[in-house]
Image 1 (cartoon, helix red, strand yellow):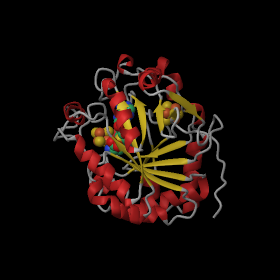
Image 2 (spheres, helix red, strand yellow):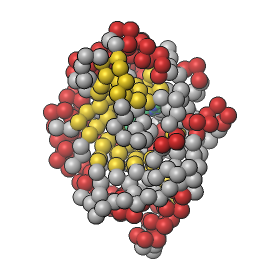
Image 3 (cartoon, helix red, strand yellow):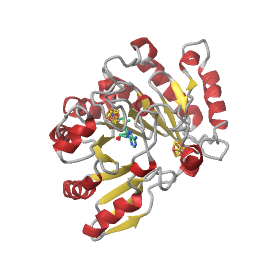
Image 4 (cartoon, helix red, strand yellow):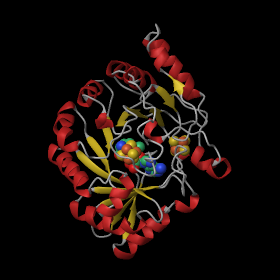
Length: 339
Ligand code: SAM
Ligand code: SF4
Ligand code: SF4
C-alpha cells in the first residue's frame, strides 16, 4: 500500500518516524541514563502485564504506517534485547506493507547471541552504543564494569550477520571527551560510521548541567586537528545527525547536536514507551496513553483517529526553547522511551 499520508502538527511537521521502546529494563547502568543509585534493586520496573504485547505493537505499528504516514521504525529501550523473543516482533513489523526501514539501538552486549536471528527476521540496521575504548572509562560509564571487548564482539557479530552498523557515542565533558579522537580513529579504520551525541538533559536522574555538554563545535575541532573533515549534505530532511567525511576518503562521521544546535523544526518522530504511552517529544513530561484504547473495543480506524488528534495538537520544540524551560523537573526517563 502506498503511504503518502500527510498529517501535520501545529508547526507543519509530518509524522514519519516511530521509535518503539520494548522494555524499560537494561543490563547496564550508564551514569547519564540509568544511574545505579536510582535504578537499584527496588526500582519499580514495569510488570509483564503493563507492557504492550507483540500483537498490540504490531497492530499499532500497522495503524501508524497505513493511516498516519510513518515509514521508519526504530526498536529501542531500555535494552531492547532484554525483551524475550524480540526477533518475533521484528518479523511481524517487517511484514507490514509500507515499512521502509527497521533499525534498532542497542548496547551491543547481547548481539553475539541474537544478531543472526534479528537479520533473518528482517532487521536492517543497528546503532550500537559505545562511549570509550578504555575499559577503565567505559566500565565506569556503564556502571557494571562491562568491557569494551564485549561491545566490540557485538559489533562484529552484527556486521557478520549482514546488518548495517553505526556506532553511537555520548560525549560528556570530563567523562569521555578525551576519547573522541581515539574513537574516531578506530572506527575510521574499521569502516563503521561513528555518531557523536551531545549529552542531553533527558529525564530527571542524571543531574544534567549545561557545563557538562561537550558541544558539536568542540568535537569537530578536536577531530579536524588530527584528521581534517568536510561537511556532507543530509540524506533526507529531518536527519538528526550533521554529517562529515574525512577529506580524501568517503568515510563518514556524524554529530547529533540536540543541545548546541537544535533541530526541532524538522522533528518528525513519535515515541511509544514500553507501557504504551505515546510521547511527541523526547523531553515531554506526559505521554498519551494508547494501551487502554488498544485494549478497548475501538476499531483500527477509531484508534487511528485518537493518534491523529494527538499529532495534530503537537507543539513540542523543547530543544529550541531549552534555555527558558530547563527547569522542567518532570521529564520522562530515557530508559522509558529510548532516545
Ligand atoms: N540500551 C540501548 C543503547 O544504549 O543503545 C538503547 C536505549 S538508549 C536510551 C538509546 C541511546 O540514548 C543510546 O545511544 C544512549 O547512549 C543514548 N543516551 C542515553 N542517555 C543519554 C543522554 N542523557 N544524553 C544523550 N544520549 C543519551
Ligand atoms: Fe541501558 Fe542504553 Fe541507558 Fe545505557 S544508555 S543504561 S545501555 S538503556
Ligand atoms: Fe523533537 Fe522534542 Fe527533540 Fe525537538 S526536543 S527535536 S521536538 S524530540
